[in-house]
Image (cartoon, rainbow, N blue to C red):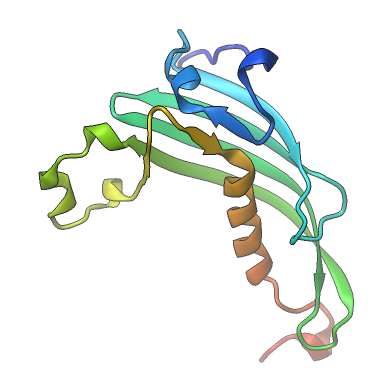
Length: 152
């Protein structure tokens, strides 16, 4: 197992966004970042704690994340509020746009072919990535745990 680098220096990071080029230029193959996010459209019990790890690859990078917090939801059946603890694992692969060929765009997809295309000169919006996973998690819990609210 490779030893991760120290956290990205504060001067090189934004809590919500990181520059892809700065991650690519790190000497270590793995870079880490801690962050906390609050969302306008997702109700949480305090900020969501995030631990991000970036693993450089030949044609891009893989982002691993651990999201911890608590969602404040409303039951779709009784409309009462309830909480759902969140402990999510993120594993997203990003491929640099420059590395794609026309052959890559026109073939049968395999499991390793599921990735997001990323501009090497651009930024990676970590808050948006966390938000996508939290929205999906909230959709997995439409009802509270009361017996009369569970769907048969």
